[in-house]
Structure formats: structure tokens, C-alpha cells
Image 1 (tube, rainbow, N blue to C red):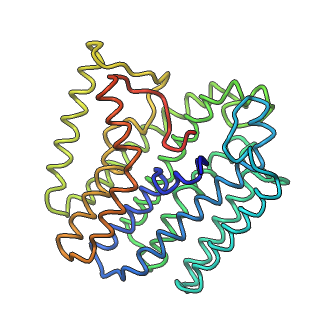
Image 2 (cartoon, rainbow, N blue to C red):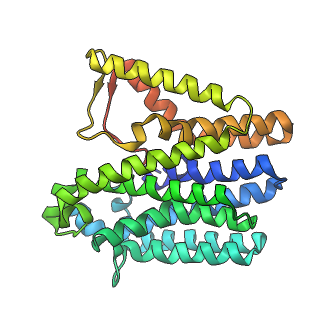
Length: 321
């Protein structure tokens, strides 16, 4: 029960996928059963990705002292869990029955498998590994949702580009922090191949992601009161930076990660809850959508509480154990 894979329902991957589905729900009619079937399919897909990654990374994690909850179960039990989650993923197809969605989903599933499993192991292919990781964790799941509704527009392209670049920034930051442990285990990530390139690329991707998230925010301006949320969130971030500069708030990050930026907080944390509330006000039957959106932000609420309590912005990702 202590396995980090359960947190995928409250991760940034789920947030951006949920945001895409909520956005589509505001511009067209979406059946609630289809809504939750899509969310469920992606939730178990994300869980599968974590399971496979942790399974094939066990020797490397053990070598660096990084012990996961799943390391305490037998190899046989671990494999049975992976197979069970895979079957649950496949069962969704019988209800959704959308060929294009299935093609995108299965493609993402295969890439997620070979990202960490031999003989391919994309994660050790430098820059290619970063691209594949960005595809399987955010871009392709978002594409699967838009594909299900056959919505291919400028908004779709912006969603995909933002999702892709945001995760590229996240994975590069993650690899920079894991540089020393990956060096010890001989894991040839992009950062290990060239730490200098990793830092330079992270800066470029950071600003590109910020620009694309800004365009995403512009899209949401068509929804009433979105501009008010953007102004209020920006004001909060200005206050936070003032507190940090005066030493009243401590930031432990070595480099400034994208997930601490104002745009990221708007797109991944504020907008999903806001759109779910808008849908609930339009149709009370969306109450469960609103409750789920709030549930996905549990770790965000927890982090905010800890920041207010300890006055420290600690280094940590939502899926850390």
C-alpha cells in the first residue's frame, strides 16, 4: 500500500490529462461514463508505467540505496501485479471501443514498456530517452483523449506541445538531480552523457514550456473569470518571491524547476479544479467530477500546507516516495 504508483492519480501526468478532458467537456457534450472510463484507463496506464520502470530499475535502485515499497515483495508477485494492471488497461477497450484512441493508447503503452525494459531501454539513449519519456507520460495520453473525441485543432496542438515540453523540462530536472546516482550505476541518461548540455537544454525547454503554457492560458480566457484566477495566482507568486528574497521563506531547490512556476501552477493545479466547478455549476451531475478533481490535488494541498507551516519550499516531486 506504500507503493508510489498509487500517487499517479494525483500526479502532474493525471492533472494535464484531466485538464484536457475537462476542457473538451466545456466545449462539447461528454458522457460521464466515458469521462470516468477515460480517466480510469489513463490512471491504470500511468500505474503500469511506474510498475515496469521500478521492476527493471530494481538493480540500479538497490545499488544507490533507493528502496521502493515494491522491493519488499517477491519477483513473482511483482510480475503478477504488472500483468493484472495490464489486463485492467486492456479491459477499458471493450467499453470505449474507439479505434483511434486504442491505437494511440497501445503505442504509448509499448513506448512506456521499452522506456525502461531491455533490449531497447530508451531511458539510456540520451536525448531520445527524454523525448520518449515526454511522449509516454504526458503528450500521448493527452493525444489519446483528443483522439477519442476526434478533436484536432489549434487548441489540440497547443495542448500537446505544452504537455510535451513541460515533461521534457521535468525529466531533465529529475536527471540532473539523479546525476551522481546514475553515474555510479552506469545509467546513461541525457544528464550523464553531458551534464553541461543538460543544464543548457533545461533552460531552453523551460522558457519554451512557459511560452506554451501561456498560450494554453490564453485559450482558457474564453471561459468566464479565468482572467481573475490568472491575476490572483500571479499576485500570490509575486508575494512568494518577495518573501524568498527577504529570507522569510526558504527555497531548497538547487535549480528553479518548472513545477514551481506560476504558469505551471495555473495549468496543473488551478485550472483543473476551476473547470470542474464550472461544469458542476452548469450540470449538478458533475459533482463527482469536481470531487475527483479536488482529490487529484491532494498532494498539492499537502505541500501548500507544509510550506505555510514550515516556511520552506522543499525539494520534492509528487511521485517521490
